[in-house]
Length: 405
Image (cartoon, rainbow, N blue to C red; front, side, top):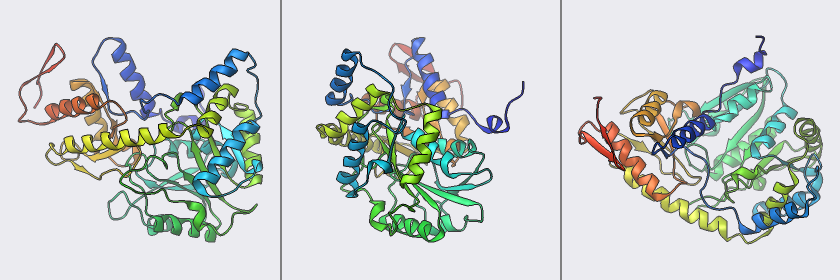
């Protein structure tokens, strides 16, 4: 079989693979605990559900414009004004089938083969493959000091003649850390100076803890006109717990949005009308669900961090936001893929190996599920890894016996 060069370079999404494997095990009756997911368990806002139901009941579910309906664009414009204090026009906005598609069509619009895209490590698992899908080259930029907090020099030392763009995701998936305002300012100023595209993946910017405030990249941009190379991406999946609705967006200069819309028009056409209706209602409706989710996540984070203290040799940087913790398990196994498989096989706990995020020896643990799952999942992991743990563990009415050292 003949497979394209690009096709041969693209791997399976590890997070989707782990989700699928967990679903299969659950279908067989296995008591799986999923600590690897990126999906809040809260219900979608009632405003969104009612709006979608009303359109479905009307039977008038039709094609939509490639860049989104007028109502969807108006909601994005309002969102940008309310949360970024920045006014944009419909020509500067595209709605997509999720923030992932918004990033993908942006990359397709700006990259040529062999161009390079820089992003701090650890990074969201899809960035490298999305860049490869454009025939371009991903350039991870781990912090020189070994932390999750990059400095501008970590970016600049990797810039070369083929560098085309920088991607910044803050708060960050998988670490949960929020980059400092000074760092964001420096990156914005540097990208403007070097004429580089800057993609700000802000999908978690309202899910922040401990009194911290989101950093507004527009405050530091000098060029916000038709030549601006700043692209700000967001969506409803995380903050409104509307992952399955698949509505995201990008705000950029009009010419780039026009090109992105052309690409999207040939890829998928416009996002589904029912889902745009729901997203508009969520953005324009009562916002209490976002704050309720944020408070729930903060509580869950604190519970997870407290439980992780019981492990010998596990190091954790407390997350500033998101619903992920990126914990250093090198003390137990520096091969994170092997460790993740071990935990799934032995105690049926799903984690995501850090190697997929550019840092081996770590595990991404999600705290967006139920408190019971967090506490029991960590308890099972502790039993599996602690050589001093009892020889037996009960999961419901099932008895597990340690058969490893």
